[in-house]
Image 1: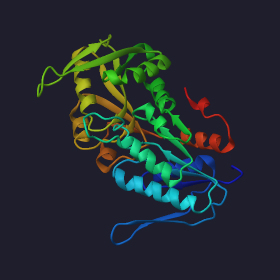
Image 2: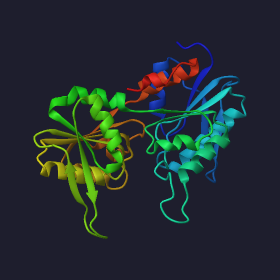
Image 3: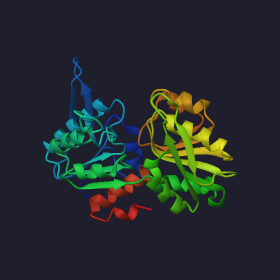
Length: 315
């Protein structure tokens, strides 16, 4: 059991993940009550002494993102005003992370705005997994530990997809660096899908760079949201001779038509982690497999609390 004042509190987005983290650390879950007034306002009450303690608040800013962000900042404020020594916001999935730059005139950079809210609330450290854009770390003026789900996903790949029979595939040009890193460590080949839209309202043309004929094609992505990219990529890979197609992604957002698309697609299996809890439809989908990042996060929390290196957790 850990000695010293380390306490872990759960927001409403990741209660099961937080419970597993506490089990791995052999500590009780922090006592906090989150309620709503009749007008919808959130209210947080910390039910135990946290003075001079190292606090970790686990909360993905997933759907409903706005509610979860407000829960997080209100809980951080309550802990700060209760004289906590340090407050680390553990954000397994960083919502609004895709709004990291201006894509048109007069548009916001919401990823930066969320950073400002969390920092202003009183967080002294951030811990996140697989940011959509790594440069978001620089939006904060407090220490940021950026973990990767690669160790968790690679274990499953090694067990189920022998390197000599597998090719790892980036579903778009933006994910090439990620797929290359997995390919290097897995020991398999690399392929890239080049998506092009000839003109407005014309379907994308998918060109595949790399050899996929006769191999298991493993798509690698950070987020599965509506699953359009993955399902289109799977069709293109099979048309090019891939033996079968599976997909690995860190964050299973799975919104809108995602489950229907996956059910109707040629993808045999989609492996995600529990950074985002699956919705009811996703839990019923037999194609989806969930791996837990709780062991990875518990090791990180232990090392941060004890002042040890976190970088040794990278593959």
